[in-house]
Length: 480
Image (cartoon, rainbow, N blue to C red; front, side, top):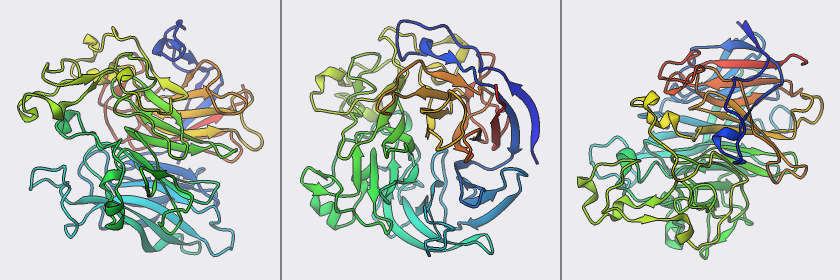
């Protein structure tokens, strides 16, 4: 059932503009008015939400292992399938990406749905990065499968594994999935949170490319920090890039945690990526591109980021205490400009700050990371409706965020290759926004929220209590 409760005239107020084009002070409050309501709540971890050809919202539920179809008018939930071999031990594994075959429901014999999830497979070799033999992640992998949809029963069945043995772990699994206009399946894998927090002694492998021997053995550990491109049967496309002499599923590399990908109407592939303490990135993915992580965060400008190589510390790493703010002097550090390899710069950051930025804010207490200038972009959608839409709102990228519980609108240039104007902020609520879907007329935005977690509150504080746990919120343009 839909509960309508507020009309938003403008977004929550933010600080005034500054001289920096893409820093936290440059954001403007949005001015388009929307009516806000709740379609459904209490979902145990919605991850992907997409509009189906049956005019239903298709949703993957990360922790429950369910794919649901939800009526966008009544909120009625119909479960299509529940996976029994799902493995979920953290806040980033489980049932992740979901993509519908473009020919679904068209009578062409291609009523297929694609998804990805993590599972345990003790028959495969142990993860070489996991040193604890009792770790639940020792034999955790991700796989991508294809399912057959039966419109009569509204169910999914006949799972067929397209690729298995993909790296997975406790952090930064990414897991966004899209089918491109070229008919290929695209999938993102993060660098698993290496070189920080509980994984601070594990090197980042986002720059490592697979060897011919690894590909022959179907050993995919080098796929960390990459975007993948594959045929709809899981095989490697003949026109995939050849990197370091080897052709694989890898489309781009040098990524941190890419939780959003979206195709524009002209086929441009946009991506949103989590930065460390600053410099969340908005990228355009191009075949064979290197996107710089961990040597560069955002632009190669030496602002507020140095690559600290904890695993290479002269003091044994395991005896050190990890800190984002006070790096032990025995840990080697690199400025961004010391890395000379060519790489693809982002088209925008959320956000770049000077090196003297104060990353320790007393108001954030033990949740300091919530006050950092990163917003934790969880999804991205290219907004350019074929017809209708919201006047003055189109030709933009819409980005949902976790830490800020907001939607950011990034206006694009006419050719869609750059950001061309101030970034706007909408829909700030006391929630963590996970993904969005847009109605076919382009006038209603559906946003899935996390069931819990830390975030910035509307009054400028921080909290780990969300207002609408596991919900799908509706933001409908009201004509103003």
